[in-house]
Length: 419
Image 1 (cartoon, rainbow, N blue to C red):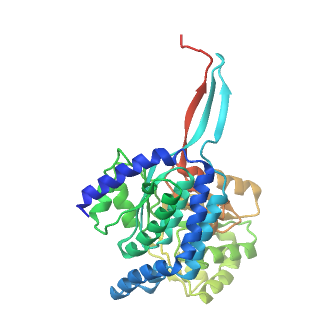
Image 2 (cartoon, rainbow, N blue to C red):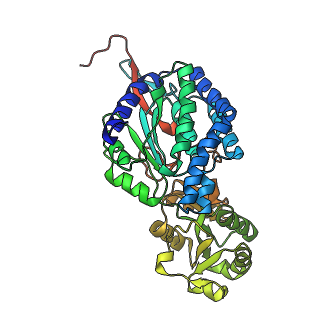
Image 3 (cartoon, helix red, strand yellow):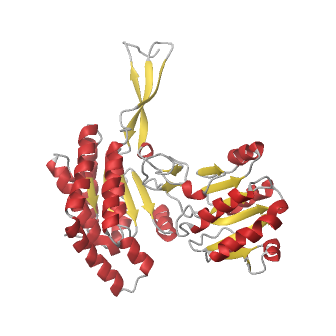
């Protein structure tokens, strides 16, 4: 197989070559790749699950958690979801070649901006093998070549999925190198990928904070990332409290282990006495541990007194930090200090206060009267997403097809020269 450095160097160079072809593929060819891959994944389900079983057996031997093993498993449901996801991406409008804007200069030069692929995108991610297909499908539809480095625990699953995709690419005369999975579990592979600035245009890490920080600190290539999902719901003095209860419960309880789950709940002091007892009871029944400020604990005697470290913590569990505030300004100051620019929500019936919150709170999605769980590409109408960025260059929020492209200037002249 060769040493890691040679493997990565060769992969990167081939991806760069393939990217020139993929960038100019007709929409019909890209859609055919996605639809045929979806069919092949379902047709070769038993083969995929046999390879996946190797990863599952290894994970069990290592004593990894049930939750980890669940994310690793290519069940019938997950395989169908991957196939359906590819078909959904195929049905989306192709962003490549879209003319975003055109204008005419005084000298009659017609200037425009047109949407183009980014080039070569490298995804570095953990455990879930379905990310291999999600990322490859989105990047291909947006005209990009892709290098995928999944977690070592999913190596057999990822290689099998990549093999299916590459077989389809070959059938349709598209370079197999348009989608590549790093074939080694050696950790040095990540370090080598982060050095390939001549061939790779963008790195997208997806996983725990430790992985993302390592990538951001060691990459020579631009990185799109989010470290944490510390999301809040602020229950305003003018909130419909029944609505607030439903929103806060959904934001915390529906899927507590994801990045858009609520980790902190802020409640205006004028409604705390009427809101917290019923809300607290609902959380108690759902098994949520409340860590509250002094005022919260006086209203909810069963709440644990919050430590300083609880403010701004990403629990990813049925644990919630709760603070009573005296004003919306105090709530916004708290969010500015402890938030992670991911998702923030206000529950209010006051239009002016809603507008102020939307305007002044800095997050990739700010919501009024809705759960933080909506920060998701599918839920926001993007069709699909490759991840959520909390860095503002070049995307902020869920990254769909459009965010996997950039724009270049074009100009039509009629003999103009500069004087």
